[in-house]
Length: 153
Image (tube, rainbow, N blue to C red; front, side):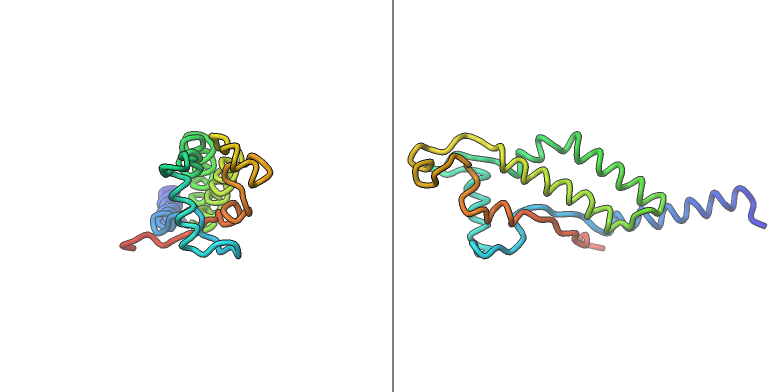
């Protein structure tokens, strides 16, 4: 028969095993999904030019903006819930990262929808609308997550 102390030790051992799953991975979010409108190289340029701006394009930081708007609330909440689910065995570490990544993707896409400043009047005339980061929709659709194995593990 298992004693109370043995049950606690077994539970702690299982929780430690579950937490190791979290240490073995990480989630990355960005313009990583292939889209027909842009090559991966073009997407990198679009992200860089809009994230930091150029001499002709003002910075429209949709990635850093999403981090600023969501890391202390939305992402912290979903991460906390994911860790609880991993510790209790309701989620694997990989599924927890996918859950967190899904929230991050949603928030980055929301940031794309609201980012400013407005387009120049010549750009609005050319595009027919004032949606600063939306032209073909390729950037928006390229936003995705990937769960990666952590380096060194």
